[in-house]
Length: 317
Ligand SMILES: O=C(O)CCC(=O)C(=O)O
Ligand SMILES: [Fe+2]
Image (cartoon, rainbow, N blue to C red; front, side, top):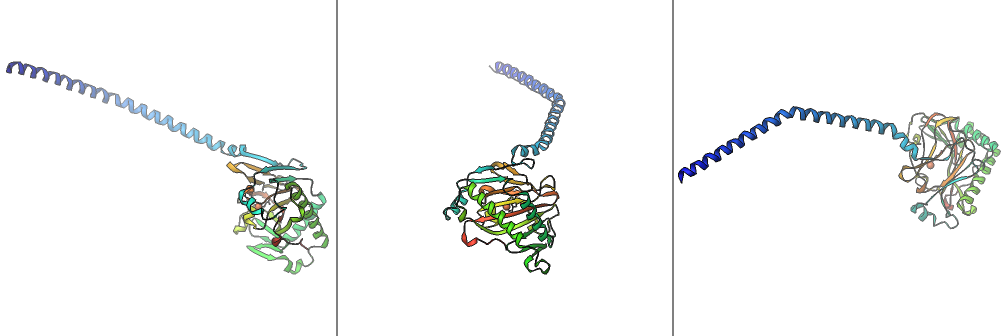
């Protein structure tokens, strides 16, 4: 029995030695293969990195097109538009606010553009009034305004009252104010018609102003006209905003397009053009911005309306 046992012990030792030998052979094989595996891994890593770089380059190249594809034009500069509109759902906040003014609640919210509302003679005259006033002042930065109602005129880093400047005493004539009133009245009727409200419950409100925009770097936050905003927030009294463009994008300046920013970063663009009127509900459904002017000088007149009698103003006179 002990001899039998020692034979079995001997056999199992041999088996275990063979196993050890085999496993050490395996170890030797793997370590022999390692250099190949390492170089394959390096190659795969390089291919991966190369693909990443290509993807990144393609994305950077296509990025502007992504926005381009999301850009839609409401009005191009090259078009002559009788009436074109874009409806959007009224924002809840605007709807809630305007309910307080019977007869002033729009049947639709959105925008409307027309190139036939104001005559070329009227636009020429209005532009001339604006230039005459703005030439007496001007911001140090890229945005100058002249508020015909209050008389506020950009001057350096702040404002002066144009009606208190000696040299501006007889600057504006009765015929200037008549033209302003004529244009205001046409726009008011068009807003009432398009948005289905009673013209009589709509009142001119402040500020009503000329703007002159250039590519000059800003000198105060007032000069940063390119930020997205909602007019109801910027100018509390506004319910309906209108803009009369006094010169033309692509001819008198580059940049300076007007963009409505809709949900999902879709944009609807109005390219300003001399005589073009754009009008829209002033609520959160119409977030918008003016692109930075890249060259030249852009002129526009903002005429806005309120349904709130306590914010009504008379025509400038
Ligand atoms: O001049 C424009 O086109 C728009 C200006 C504007 O959005 C504003 O004054 O609130
Ligand atoms: Fe605005």
